[in-house]
Image (cartoon, rainbow, N blue to C red; front, side, top):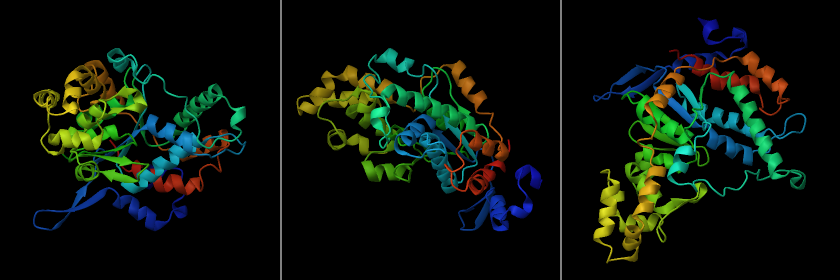
Length: 368
């Protein structure tokens, strides 16, 4: 039993207090209605951490300056792995699913809006050295090279990796959070800096922002934005999203959206048709309402592009997601260390032996 849970590690080399905490990880305490402590057994799908892999990798590639032993930039790889490790230690999930954009993932949204994500500037590191010696093509090549290295490392860790062709990571994550893991006892935390995921938050689903170092639940979104998660998409629809080249309605930001559409602040979920009718009925009262009414096609388009609660995924692709999520890699510390040697990254992840043990062994406890 010990060898199954802790492969490739000498029992004498393990801190016993950490070993005991490993087994404690499968138990979760809560109080019943009488105030009595009840210990609940955690299963593999009790607390699922779903990582927006594309978003997190690009972010760490841009801001992490780490070089490998050969002086080559590997910040996208080391930054992603250490950020993932931090989240796992903090949130103690029972399983981890990392989702990347699939090949041709933007096609559906571009069929709705051809300029979707058009005009994006090439990804650049914020602190890259010798900038005059690295052109945009070289930087892009480096980024994709690091992503392939990251994918190689992930095969040695107890995680599930998904990249479904013709689906963006956002839609795959939304489907997992609201459909694949939808039982009352299955809690989901989405790890992403993209606030579009706030629209998915409910009593089971939360969002961990690795930038703000904060877990967002329903009340957290209300406190910070004054809008309930189930209506958050309409604020985003009206405001637009410059990062995806989605233009909003002129003159509308968060404060104006709340002032002119107070139903966004209510817990009752509204429909797009109600929001448009509300603006149309008041089009003579304010230029904001008139502008929304005149641009109702744009509002409808933005909703089609930005809503995630009901992702537009074919039945065949839904089945592919459900089949893919059943598989996961096994933890192999020996292979992971071999890869550190292969990519000259032994110093890129400090104390990697301890880090692997503390972060990833607890996930190995939970079996299908």
